[in-house]
Image (cartoon, rainbow, N blue to C red; front, side, top):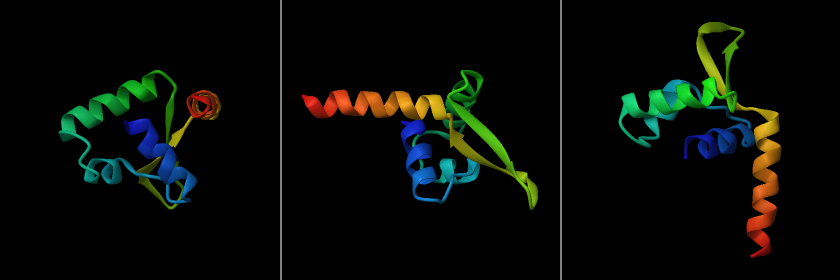
Length: 79
């Protein structure tokens, strides 16, 4: 799941770039880009330009999405 990888790297203090996401080989590059764009269009993930190099974007999970995932995790852990 793309959003899980993006969130994990963000929590580790090393936010993913689009290239970094592609290097994880989670699927074909075109498929990963298409799925990422769908997450961005839905507002679940944001692309944030890096101040020192506008060509690079860090990927960030939307705070509301992060809260939803935390709730789901609590429910899963109860099982």
